[in-house]
Image (cartoon, rainbow, N blue to C red; front, side):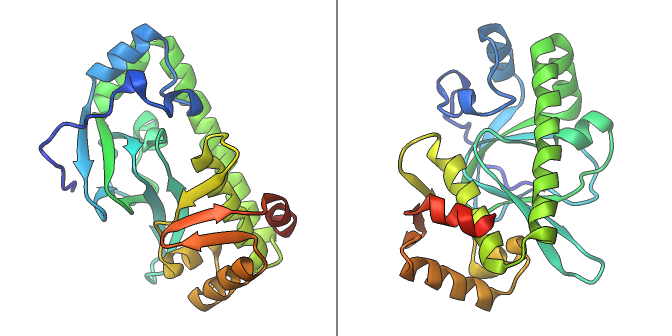
Length: 237
């Protein structure tokens, strides 16, 4: 399923800037050295599928660089984007641990470096390292929490502007890594963003234009800068 590059990734777990900010990879020196030795890192192009909804769970996928969209499709062909995963996220964790099928489809939305760990190798790793098992449990807990808030966002937010503001704030804060400037790269089209927010492409285009006019955000190409996080927070409440 994957269109993998034959070249090994140059990403090094020991020097990764995201390790201390993400749940699973923040391991002790011994655990990190073992984690570095398992799996295969590879460069993937935009549009590569890591796994397919309802497909057998063959392994987990750690995002080293790039972004991956998680989506599901109804029987009538309507697609809902559930999340944009970022560096440090571990995908397929729940399905691999439970032995069930993947719940969603994972597809890169920009060139990415991905570490793939086969199911048996991953289960053996977390059995060897208690801290890795604990971090896996915490990561699953965070997935549940995120799913809860996403469902709340779609069901209870009264306006498309509020839902869009919450999404932009979430991406910006995750990408800024506690820096004072909140900036991120928008890798989705307006149509895909509409699928994520639960709205139409026309509404998303109109709302982004409004946010720019009101100086809530600044957009230059694919780069989005949050100018007024406080006002976006008020919109999303």
